[in-house]
Length: 278
Image (cartoon, rainbow, N blue to C red; front, side, top):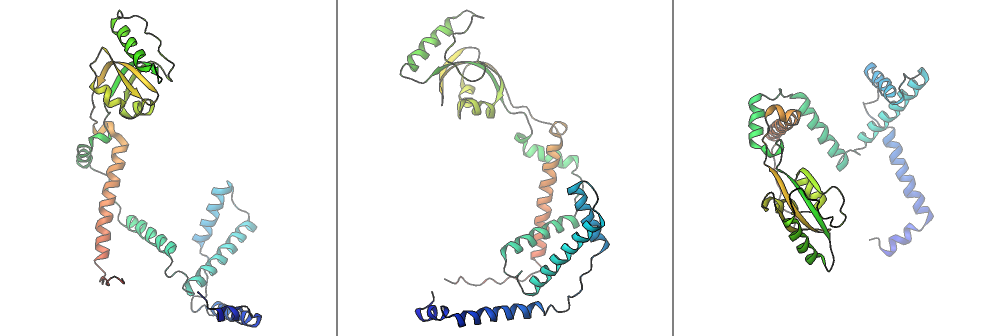
């Protein structure tokens, strides 16, 4: 924190002007001392890239004047980039560091392309992760809803007795309004959880089929449930897993290859680790 004396100095106009003048002199000196990197070459490939970028954005080719402006803009940015680098502004900058690391990772991938996954690799990955590609267990059931309230439990018991004694094919008692149909057709755990809350699907799996059971609680209230059918997990094949499996294997192989390349790169450096400062 500046001392009282230094704060007094900083309030003097001559001192402030001297500091600003010194900073401007240093910057002017740096700007006139670019060094050997004085020539900016706008290559044909660069011009083609600028023209293609304009075409993508505007859906038409640029005019000669528009292209000249784009080239001039690129030259100005290149001059700024080179001067910033000459001043060392790229040193100890975490944003630039992350961008360079990201570009280097892309470069490693570009220079080490991978072959397409073999059938053996696809089958092995599918066997190791069957749950990702198979059809999950599903349940078809119907339910009668009783809204929460002081009489919810006795109403549920009375409705359950009525449902169990009803003749096959009889019209179900209405219960209370609930979003969606009373018959849920072959829903998996994700779909059931979304509508009835966590744990509802797991409870349904424990109920005897073809008979009314419950009540089963949800965040909205109570449900009397009759499980009509339970569909077990269906394993996938390489063919049915399709592009999702292929993409996952590609990603897995790329990650493994990248780890090998990074380990080899790290091995080219001598690492000395200092003791903690505190």
